[in-house]
Image 1 (cartoon, rainbow, N blue to C red):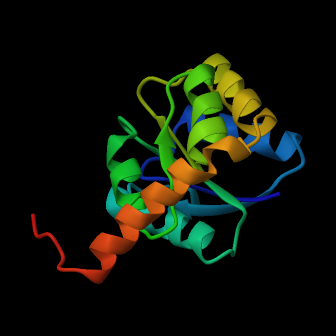
Image 2: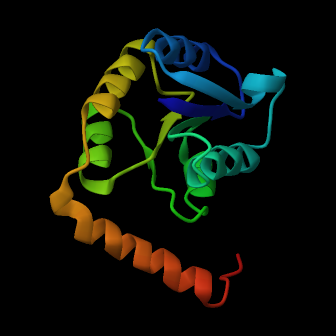
Image 3: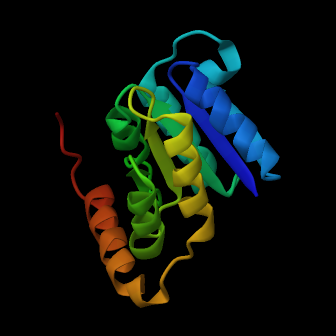
Length: 154
């Protein structure tokens, strides 16, 4: 599987996840500070990884920022993206099973290597439940409604 991995900061946990993904046989495309080694804007990292997934350039994405919240918000602005902030394996499993999440988000601050491995195990071993097709369709309809109507300004 080809996976986009991005972060606004390069940290131990980003390096650990990249090596774990390679060990599992995935192809990796890096974004943000994982390429430059310098701090990068989290909205740009979230957007870049999400666009790579949405266009089909990669199969899935994994993104990091200090809390994980910022990159999740940015990624979820890209149509077709269902980015899930996961702090544990059960959340990752649920995000895959019920939400058909295609971008995994983790916190640089809170995610240890042990927890990251558990999250990755759950993420890659859980398939989308076909019984949830209708709920994912409802989310897509919300996205479509707001992308076709007026833009909500902050």
